Length: 168
Image 1: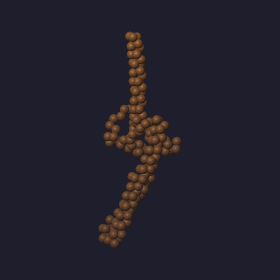
Image 2: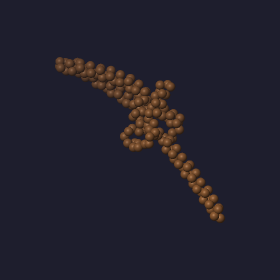
Image 3: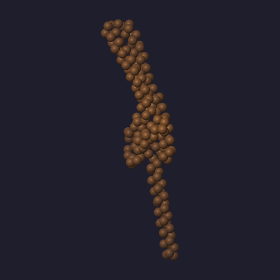
C-alpha cells in the first residue's frame, strides 16, 4: 500500500511539474506576442510621410510667399491711402489665406490618413509574419508606462514599412 501511495505521489508530482511547465511556457509565449510601437516615431520616420510632407511644405511655402507679397503690396496701398486698391487687395488676401488653410487642413487630415492607411497595412503584414497576437500603438503620453526590452518594436516596424514603401 505504501508502494502504491509513493507511486501515486510521484505521478502527481510529475503531472504537477508538466502542468507548471505548460502554463509557464503558455504565459511566457503569450507575453512575448504582445508588443507596441510608438505611433509618433513611426509616422514621422515613415518615408511616405516624409515624401508627402516635402510636397506639402513646397505648396505651403509657395502660398506663404504669395501671401507675403500681397500683404507687402497691401501695406503700400494703405500707406498711400489708396483705399480702392487696398480694399480690392483685402479680398484677394482673404482668398489666398483661405487657400493656405485648405492646404494645411488637407495635409493634416487627408494626407495623414493616407499615411496611416499604408502604415496599418504594413503593421498588419509585419504582425502576421512575426506571429504577434497584439501590436499596441502608443503616442508617448502614458498609454504604456513600462515595457520590457524587446517589446518596443518601433524601429523594426519602421524599417519594414520603409522597405515595403520603397518597393523592396
